[in-house]
Amino acid sequence: MLSHIKIVLVETSHPGNIGAVARAMKNMSMSNLCLVSPKIFPSAEATSRATGADDILAKAKVYDDLHDAISDCQLVIGASARCRTISWPEMTPRESAEKIVATDSKLKTAIIFGRENSGLKNHELDLCQYLLRIPCNEEYSSLNIAAAVQVVCYELFVSAGQYSELMIGDKGKTIKATNQQMDSFYEHLYQTLTDIGFMHPDKSKSIMRRLRRLFNRADLDVKEIDILRGILRMSQDNQRNK
Image (cartoon, rainbow, N blue to C red; front, side, top):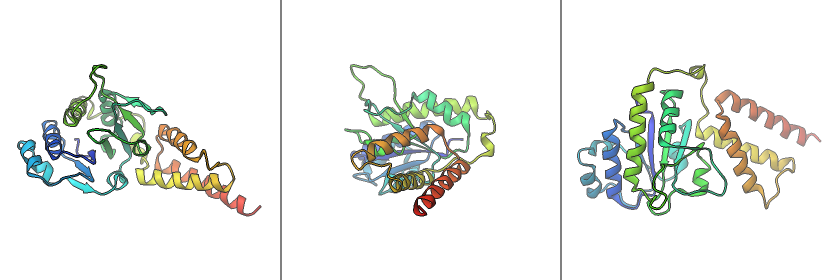
């Protein structure tokens, strides 16, 4: 039921945390673990902390780059405890679980957890459609990464039992755009806006970040991406013919 959901850990510094995450995942019938540039892995300490979930560690996939880890995913959610200058659409673990399970049980999904001491960077959150925040004591809001993963996986486990047969509208008839397709679209959009003189060098990063927020909220499918890129190509052709 939950094999289409990746738990992605970015630059984990302590191998014991990787093992603890594997244990938390197996508790909740999840098995798809991805590691992006872990400091130490494989590790005997990770295996020890996994306490019987070493099969998840054995098949964990290791990537050098976050883009590669999530390139085939259609829904990407970033976990963060910190407020950001530019707001992302936010969800609690329960809300995110209900969205993942109820929307489409086969939607390839990544839930990304950042570094133990600093979390995810803004450019990594740029790859996410949603920000996941775990409600907790405001005076002591720091969660161990394995504890955070446990909370999220628990909500997914519960939601899978409640909503496994639920279909909403005609979601099954469309194919949601992958993260790689969205990245290609954003590159095309940036180039087109540059070609028509809309982009200002000093403001291009902030403009693109806000445009990403806009299109991520739209939850685009493959056909919609094709339409938008067709518009961009026509705009570029018109610009060249002037």
